[in-house]
Length: 327
Image (cartoon, rainbow, N blue to C red):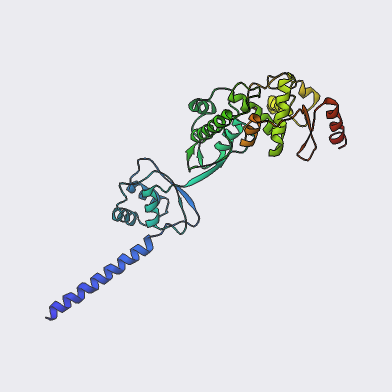
């Protein structure tokens, strides 16, 4: 009787000790060991064992065995999802295994602003650590299916992607968005405007985009350009000269700059330039296809972001005297 009681007592002690060891193991191994947020990539084709090894090598977890044991208990070994994940100081092993088995990958915001060239966007994305550079500019354009001229075909907006997305996929999303918006606006355009194709609408919109930041003025700027096209006048818009000069441009524009021999220089050439000079926002695109009703053929900056409009050249000269020469 004594021996049986003794054995029971010893068994309870051993079980208690083992339980204490188990509790201690769990408590000391359950947390991700980071002091500040880190990004961890689960590579395509990785196993839980390989993930555990990398986490251990980077001293992000204390015990590979604990990670593997929890993975088996949660039946997560067969549902591992590749991608980038954020490790935070308060993340537990249980939480992280749940994330990588359910695919709760880290997201990133990409903001493409209006009035920028495609080269600007490409350089911006190459510098973004959340975006993966993978191809040359020409290869990306070819993959998306765009031929020269490239500018204008990318809609400026804030997009949400998985962290680590490729430049090609980001720009392709922007391109597809532009095609959808353009198709809708082209279908509902003012059919009296002298534009022969949707891309000509983008070209005109890019001139409007670069002439004013005020949405209320954009239909009026559009009306001036449409009036000039109808009258076979040169558009004479400074942003086309700046675009044509490229890296040669040094502000302010000079008279000699306006004589620069280039297809995009609307001071020398009649009609629209051969391509857009930048990306365009929705309001500029809408204005290009729905100009204001009016007979203005001239406008000049008031130096406060707005413009003074005129129907005749004499009125225009008075506006120049009032708003430019007086300053």
